[in-house]
Image 1 (cartoon, helix red, strand yellow):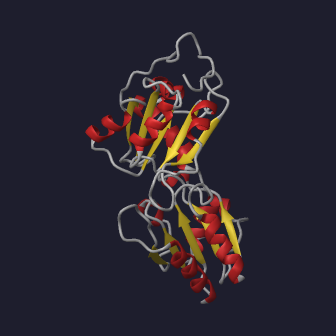
Image 2 (cartoon, rainbow, N blue to C red; image 1 turned 45 degrees about the horizontal axis):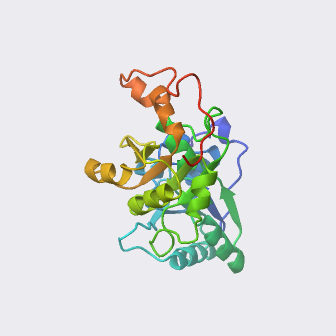
Image 3 (tube, rainbow, N blue to C red; image 1 turned 135 degrees about the vertical axis):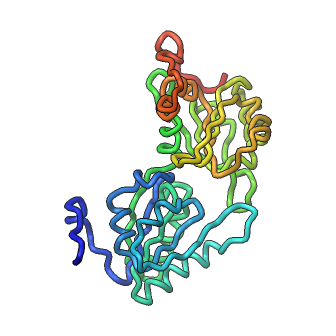
Length: 285
């Protein structure tokens, strides 16, 4: 007996053969998949997935779907970006329904734009399925809002390494330090000492709050609260490892009130962690 699709999926698009859907898998928790993402997984013939896609998310793929690992992790053997993009073209030309599954959002440090441009060049039809970026959803699971009216009216998202594996030389660290009260960094653990030094050289205080969130939104999630001056040292002592997010700014203090996962495990929350209901918006100290 054939199962009847849930009404939530009744009006969602059909995944046609020869198409590639670039799909954001969210930060890790399967509950954060969008309906479009779940719909893609259920219809796909081939799922080409990244290292940061949790197994619990892959479990939602259809039984007959081929799973193709295309993970890129620093310091480990991995396929080139060009090879991954061409593989998508090859699969689509073979008449497969290709779900390119990427952690977070495919257009936020996910190289989704590069892959989509290759598809355009090859004449392959495609669809973009946005996902919840780890820099927002992952921090929310840690009890840290990226914006809070009493703290900041701007936030900067940046990557801690470029395509060479080094800290990005193109980032204006002085401008970021002066202009952004909250800084959220992806893939910054390897160069955290260097980046922290650049921010402090530009005027950020050594005592400014920092949080490092590892394996965000999964059962393995761990959060290290520290300061800009001690972040690299405390991280090394903690033994925590990527994947990790680093957030710099006074919003980290709000975790004392908003750590909802900690509260479920018995942590006592503080109603006014900023003191007197707020702080002036802060950039460099």
